[in-house]
Image 1: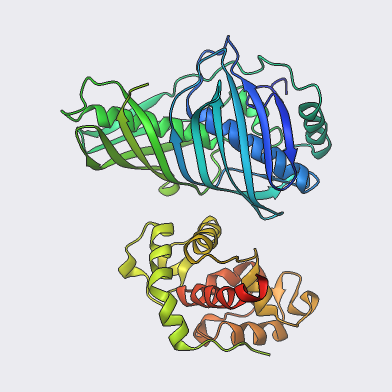
Image 2: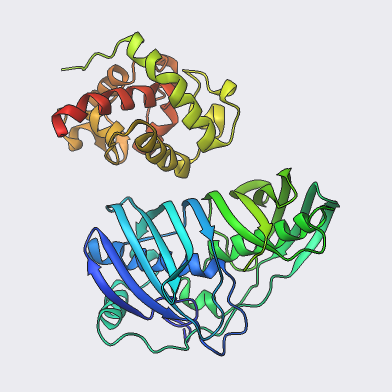
Length: 278
Length: 141
């Protein structure tokens, strides 16, 4: 497990911890990272909140991706930049953590998360509790070595249905093996929900680009709402992804997103795509 | 002692509760009938219940402690007397039938696994949760 606490860890150091209320930290996107999707900024805030939750319950449980009420994107991080992370903990017990948070670069907010809920599950299903506790001590002390994340490959999406500007469906073959599975999670590899959202966003951007009013424009994800992850996705699993246009204007488009596995809906969200002014 | 909740109290909160349920489940608000089972009738899953509780808290400005429904249903009955080996005891079942009075008797299958208690929940169950939480607000503040 060479990738443990490396391949999919997005907090380098915890700079402030007010147990049960607030946590702050830093993460530097490695200059050598091949690709750092914007959704990973949300992952970084979620992981920061997770450290607060895990330490609060004595490492008996850990949160997993569940609900994200609203994620607003105001910018993106590029390799070499440092994210200042913060999370406000609304509630935390051994059933769930509720939190909001933000990521900033040089004091400018690039991401805001509100109304997020992570169900708490027994830690020993996912990792070695004592090892997680030791990792937390490192983050609270000198910090973890930077440059641990190598990047993630762009998703391999196979289009299965495309009704221009209305609907786009594609198949995602989740890799059988990837370094991030060593870290997410060491005892139970799960395809990260934020990568799934990144894959769905890719579909949404393509569908928005079909619209005559937006065709040829530089587009970006402005907001993702009502994310709900209903089930874990295992390595090697095949998912059917879909984006359905709900409404559009000269400046953007709103869509519904879904991921299905074996006919069952495993994730849903709504997304707003806008012309990028970044 | 069983806490009485009137039909009027339930009707007062139901429209907003129905909208919250429709938003959480992504269904039409017209499909959210007062006594429809949320799992069998509206395809709700465990993550939806978590979502629902947080949405209700925000919509009504109340606090709903986790596990509140089962805890309230148990009442004064010790946990060990409410369920044994994951199965709800006869005493627990009687308590549950009384507490979830909106649920038709035939839906209480025996033996009832404690993990299956949420299968009994309906929108009315959550209306009652909200009413109880609203009543608790003055005491808590």
